[in-house]
Structures are given as C-alpha cells and as structure tokens.
Image (tube, rainbow, N blue to C red; front, side):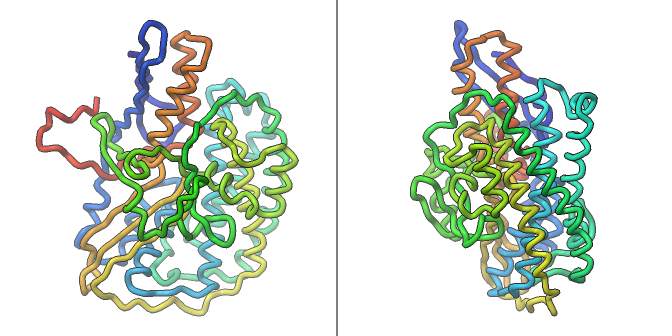
Length: 429
C-alpha cells in the first residue's frame, strides 16, 4: 500500500492510498480525514434568516452557491416568489462566483500539472503574461461578487426574498470594461491551453448529472443526466442515496445506491452545450471541444469555456439590469422547502424544515464534492491500471493529477459525520 500523505493544490485536506499487488493496481482509496463541521446540527433551532450567512461559511471559494441554494429552499418553504429583476441580479452574482472559482482552479491549482511545474509561481517565472492574466480574470469575478454581496469572501447581502441592498445600475456598469478585458483574455488563453498535451483518459459509462433550465444551468432547474434521468429537486433524495464509508469524513452518493455519477462543469457541458453563450460556443468549436467529453483532463478547457460564458452573460445581464424596487415579503409557517443550484463543482442541494415561528427543525445539505468522491476514486483506479510506467512515484503523481481534474472542495464535503457508537469500527485512518 502506497500513501500520498497530503493531497496538494486542492481545497481541504485528504490523502490517497494506492494498493499494489505484484505490480498491479488492486485498489485506490480517497481518504478524506478533514474534521467534520456539523453545519446541519449548528443550524437546528435557529431562525431561518441566519441560513444564508451560516451556510456561506461552508466554503471560502463558493459561498454564493450555498447562499443561492439555501434562500431558494427558504422561499420554497414559505411560498415566496422573487421578482425577475431580483433573479437576474442573482444570476450576475452567481456568474461572478463561477468566474472567480474556475479561474482559481484553472490557473492556480490545475494548470501546473500541464506545465510540469509545482505551482503557478514556477510558471510565472517563464510566462508572466499568463500569470497576470489569470489574476485579472479572477479579479473580474471577485469584483462582481463584492459589488453585489458587499465583500468577496462570505458575502453579506443575501436574504430570502432578495438582498439587503441593491446596487445602482451605474455601479454595475463600471465593471463592464474590466469584464470585457477578462473575456478577451479568457478566449485567448482557452485557445492557447487547447494546444497543451492532454493525456488519454476515460471516465467510463457513467451518468453525467446536472440541472436543466431554459438557459445554461446555474440557478435552478430539474435534475437530469445524459442517460435519460429526470427528477425534480423534491425527488432528489428518492433517487440519490447518500452513505458513509469507514475511511472518510465525507459522505458518498450514488444513484439508486449503486450507480456512480459525476456532477460539475463536465456534466453541464455535456448536457447543455447548445445553451452556452455565443462566444463560448464559438470558442469551443474552434478548439474542437464537443460533447460528450469523457476525458477528465479536458475539464480544464471546459472550465475556461464556462469562464467565457459567465463573462459574456454578466455583460449582457448588467446592460439590461433594472434595480429591484423591494424584496418579496416573507410570512413564516410550519413547512419544508428545497433548493438546488449549480455550484462551480456541481449540483448543490439544500432542504430545511421549519416550525410555525420559522425556526429550523431539520437541515440537509448535499454538496457536489461528496457526490463526486466515488468517480474520483474510480477514475484514479482505472487510469493507473492503464499507465505503463509502474514506478510508484510516477503513479502517485498521476493519481494526484486525476483528483485535481475534479476540483474537489473537501471542506465543503465534510460538514457532517454520523459517529458510530462503537468507536472501534471507525477507521478514518
């Protein structure tokens, strides 16, 4: 058994165990040992209004996703509909997060693998233009989040029914020149990155699961897969089964308890390619990137295409922005509600139950990284079996690359852990 002690260039803490028998890969374990954070337990008994602020703390990279899924669950429970203007502002807000999150992953975590470097700073020594453009693209997304959310990290303006403060149209329009420049540079680097060497890889005959709405999915919709699966957000838990394993503080999730699937950018791309923005589709076609994509290494290009899409959509939405006049009113009642949206890493599902005073009775959150944990293990195992070079250092390096293809957010995934009364059975080694 070979162990990679700490996975590098991923969000959170985990390790990989690779079992080799007579020179052959026997098994792979993604061992997530980061301490659970008990977010669902913390929420119990508190007022519904604290949900977007507390759940945003689950992730420092994708707090907007937690806020969007959570407020939609609250609004679902209390039969609240927000105005079209508010929904459009939420989309601009969410696109800002996609731009920022994808730029962090592509330029700072993922790209060094393709350059044979240990970090973006090693690349910067040889290509300063790439480094600075990566920062500019990330900054364009950060400024959108800050302008709407009040600050970049853990924004504070989101409430059920709308926002605590709405930006003026002129404030958002001030961002357009910077977004346009980021769009031009993103298209340029997408074409450049398409010329990188992408190792062969096959994610297998699995479900690619994403939301489906009228436009490229981000804020809401039904849950679909490339194999014909289609369920509402209320039916999610009837089909998608969460379970624990002894070696991980994060849950896993399978369709009907047995079928492995993947959520995230590759699923959105494969299921809704034709709904990407005009420049994003044009760029994808120019570099020969068409669905279905099953090579996990090419998710680097897909995230760049989604950056292009979000930048272009942000410009369009800001130009058509009308400041909402007021928030939708909330009347609490004893009820339950569900919300789902597309976090940068995949579908993020929330469900809450409330008493007659709006206090939280139950909270259930299913983040994308726990949904992708199985496919990460499976992909590493299958990929290593096909690698001809069986040198252990080379194999461990390849295993880390596969994990980074999925952009795992381990901190998001370890918000809950059911402790067995028999502690001897707990094997989070």
